[in-house]
Length: 171
Image (cartoon, rainbow, N blue to C red; front, side, top):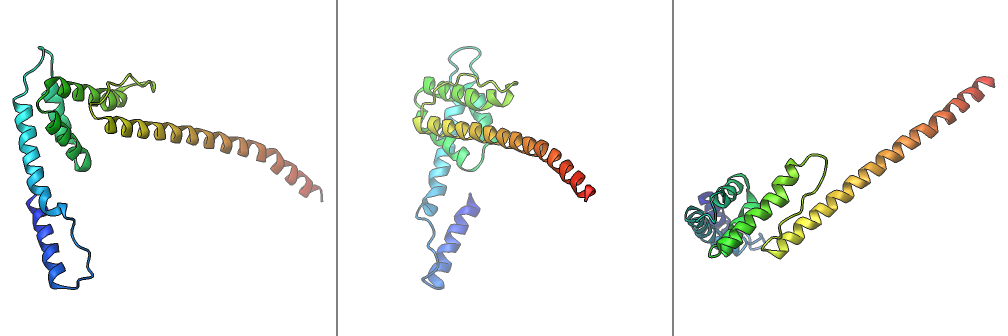
């Protein structure tokens, strides 16, 4: 985070010192470390202070595991979701269920069956995941069709090739 802040400051100085035609750094560049650190602190406090709804409630553990393994936009999106839902343990539990149902279970599912997905508390996230899943299904169907076309093409070429070889040999 400090490196990001220093890079923002450096790009700001070089822009002022050099040519005015150089691109300006994002206005969010100066605010991002403060907002990000605040969000990280709140998320850590929320997960540390989470009171399980029942004995087998592993919401904090699952959300923390996702935070530990995500990076970039995925991490910041999850942190902002936890930040927004911090005051409602039921919504945090629903977020946990959504992540497990939409990401972990499909990864572990054998045979390509898609389990029912718990709705996300964030409608835009649910739409984005649905769009990605639809595109993945279309790509898979397209790949299968391409394989079928190639196998048919190679099987129809063999008799033609044999026929040509026989006719050329007869000349």
